Amino acid sequence: MAPGVNPKRGNYLHAGFRTGGKKYCLRINRLVLRMFDREPLPGEEASHLNGNPQDNHITNLQWQTGSQNCRMKAQHGTLVRGEDVKTSVLTEEVVREMRQLYADGVIKAHIAKRFGTHPTQVDRVVTRKTWAHVV
Image 1 (cartoon, rainbow, N blue to C red):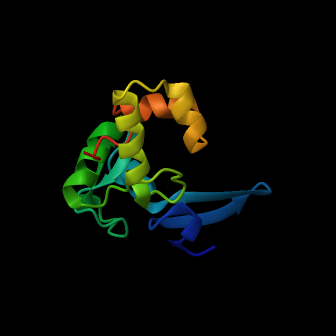
Image 2: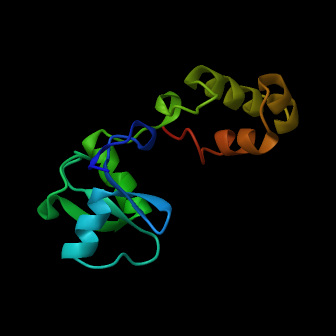
């Protein structure tokens, strides 16, 4: 299989191959770093320094922790969050309403029932563990 973009896996270039009856699909950025830099330490991700996930030149790649990579994505403007996440069920409007209801003394279980979600999700929203960018 030739290298290319797999739409199911974002905008990253992948190389696919078969061996021993198994199919593999690996990101090119990780392959380049493993070949020309080193093996990743536990928890490290391949980060694109210029924010372009298709620029896999070794000078544009670096191993980083997940939080470092997230900060870099925020700097590049490529961090996907909130309503831009394809699987997001909530909206910024709903998040604001949840926070207001909680501030007004409504318990998390009632807020969750009202919006068809789980109290744990409500807790993450009102404590700003998620949707922290919403004011």
